[in-house]
Image 1 (spheres, rainbow, N blue to C red):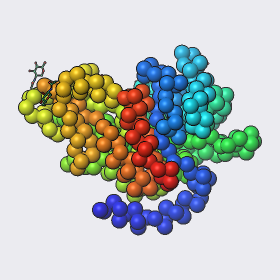
Image 2: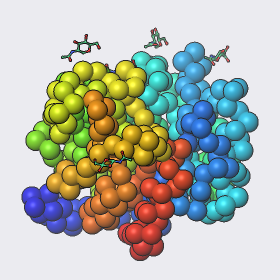
Image 3: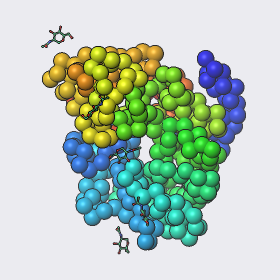
Image 4: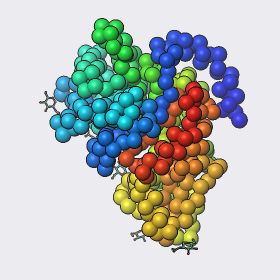
Length: 373
Ligand SMILES: *[C@@H]1O[C@H](CO)[C@@H](O)[C@H](O)[C@H]1NC(C)=O
Ligand SMILES: *[C@@H]1O[C@H](CO)[C@@H](O)[C@H](O)[C@H]1NC(C)=O
Ligand SMILES: *[C@@H]1O[C@H](CO)[C@@H](O)[C@H](O)[C@H]1NC(C)=O
Ligand SMILES: *[C@@H]1O[C@H](CO)[C@@H](O)[C@H](O)[C@H]1NC(C)=O
Ligand SMILES: *[C@@H]1O[C@H](CO)[C@@H](O)[C@H](O)[C@H]1NC(C)=O
């Protein structure tokens, strides 16, 4: 496979840069998952024994001060997050995610454009993580979609890493972890690419959001939400991972995003129910998102037909004109084996409340040996 050849060719190059990485010698595998309020479960409900890292989403950027803040509605649950999830697993590490899909991308761009506002953002994020007991910070700036924004993202990350290192030296505590949720490919915002060198030098790892490839409000046909392999277009987790590695991101600093949700479409014709079948909108809401546990319920209540496609590595189910793309247990175990095979840092799930009584992740736990790295 071409991507494996590239991986081998790049290996000495990657190793050299890995030596420069502050955290590489103690790089821990990442079995991550995100939680957010109103997802249907509390932090204490999470079976944290299945995870090495849990992300608490989201802290916000206050555009008038450029400080990172936790909304008053979330103050209590976020402050208790680390102690709550450590009840079942004292060694699980927690990161405070900043931003997210519904945050204002313009505000992030404005903050990152000036050195003084970057400093305010960085200093407040570190203080907030420490005062709330988090072990790290995770940046979810969804769309740094121009050359200027990418350059400023690079500056922000380098300054963040310097500040995190200085704070650790002063406080004597372990340095805060730094990660970022990024698009599945460094070329997503083409023609401008992510600042990969700054990311590799500054972040412990990136979380590549290898999902949302097909959804009812931006696709005209059915298609796999989170294909691992190319189903006839360039949208796949493998394409993204290969592109990140080719662009210079060490494999050991890449986490593969796995959806614990699906995308529900309404078929134009109930008898045309494969991939790339014409659709007529969403089966549930305009975005069509449905948690895995609700899909499992839907399948059993409706006796829906389920299909696992081993070429694409994705599953779908259908009943009447309802068609849902999702990652089932087989999909996820194949993706985890892939992450291991390519020497990635690990994986992360959006989001933990989507699991069906921990079936998805329980499976992962069994198949992911401790010597993952
Ligand atoms: C941002 O911070 C200012 C100053 O502290 C405050 O007045 C304002 O309410 C904050 N805005 C939001 C959206 O939290
Ligand atoms: C983002 O925030 C800016 C001001 O901070 C505002 O002008 C703009 O309308 C906001 N955009 C969205 C999509 O809310
Ligand atoms: C799509 O759905 C709308 C509303 O239910 C209906 O009016 C329309 O005829 C449908 N189109 C197709 C191609 O099925
Ligand atoms: C999809 O629908 C959601 C909900 O209406 C909306 O917020 C989002 O912007 C839409 N995305 C696109 C690409 O149209
Ligand atoms: C479920 O569907 C299968 C075929 O798809 C059928 O053989 C079976 O009888 C159905 N079961 C129920 C309870 O409807």
